[in-house]
Image (cartoon, rainbow, N blue to C red; front, side, top):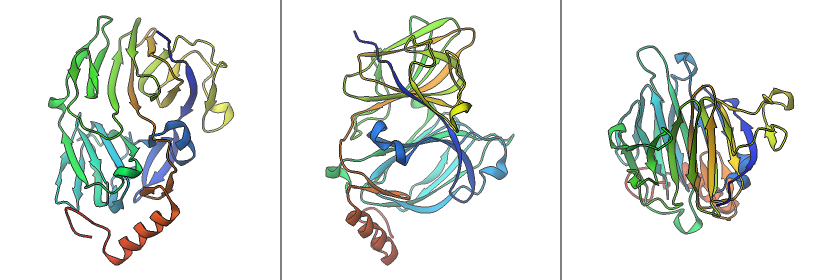
Length: 304
């Protein structure tokens, strides 16, 4: 089997979104061709409520899916389909905007003011851009955990690991979404389908990816050129985009490493993206914003 190699490394960078939420962007608009079908990954871990409490008030989406995974704290959600609730530590929200949805997400943190979570945007193909919107609230108790022979713990949110299937199914881009912890002095090997986009984002500790110990063997993108930590390890807050192959390998040395491992089927379609709406053409974008302004944006399951 061919091991995937590191194609490129991305260090998350600070941005402000919503009503003033301080977060770190792992990748976004300019990296779309590399991460297809994924559009954006945001890391909103924070210990200062003043930097996240204003949240993301009511706003529209069309043409994408948003996937919110909470490690610590609460996020209140409401949308134009009438869904309302709170996702808390270990929970996930998988929202398909499709033809259009208006929603809000308001981070609350835990009793100590700690808020930890991630939001991923996945593109929808042209044939499904205008599908009916849907909302899935996945509780932590629904997510199976697999312990591999090497001792790695894998929370299977989407996909199948050692016969255990995650609770999120029937997703257009056929993704895999795993939360993996590799104990110290252990290795994790995971098979991946060829032709898929596969990346990992380290959320705790550090590890060696793809058995690559030469930090100058791959391209690294950070806040600026000299900010990258040029040692053999991929650190917390850093993403690894893999080249093609049959499997990925991650090794932990003197401390455990925890990361999100995500993959999906590339769409290979044009991307027209402005703000919260992603379509295939500029004309479709223009139509979406016109409909939002004139109150005809919502096509199914709610009110504009």
